[in-house]
Amino acid sequence: MKISVIEGDITTLNVDAIVNAANVSLCGGGGVDGAIHRAAGPELLEHCRTLGGCETGLAKITKGYQLPARYIIHTVGPVWYGGMKNEPELLASCYRESIRLAIEYKLTSLAFPAISCGSYRFPTEQACKIAIREVKDALERESYNIDVYFVAFDKKVFRQLNQILKQ
Image (cartoon, rainbow, N blue to C red; front, side, top):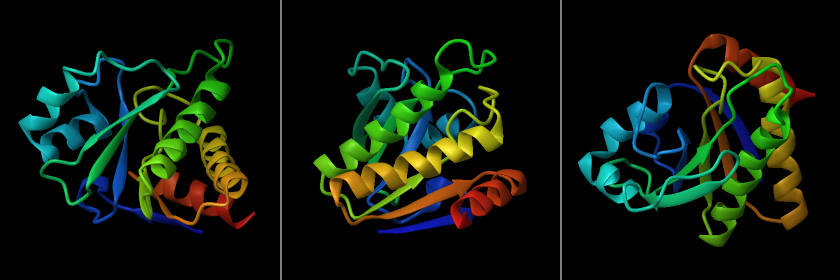
């Protein structure tokens, strides 16, 4: 198991799967979600319309279409409401469910964005701690060997993820 942090555009990575910080409709939106839909092409939207959406904390998988990645794992992170609506557990579930699908599909490389850290306003430090902890725990529990990349969209998230990973 190798876990790395990189700063860049998740849509350009040549990995088995990228994780999409999706909204409940799975039909595209802003931020990472919109970028992935634009880069993957219109076939992704067509496919996502057949999936019936996705609940917060869960995940679904599609082909990568025009992306370098073979698959996209769509997971819906929680909107931050001060931590009073089970947000930390829902975010943790996003990472566990994404790893579960990676194992089910026998993936060898997976890239995560900082789920819920953008427009969903989850506190960055707390979200990064949850991300690193849940990925490490899930992979150790399952004894699964996979290269995981956390892809930061800005320097603040990049520094935070690196700091937590080194602890």
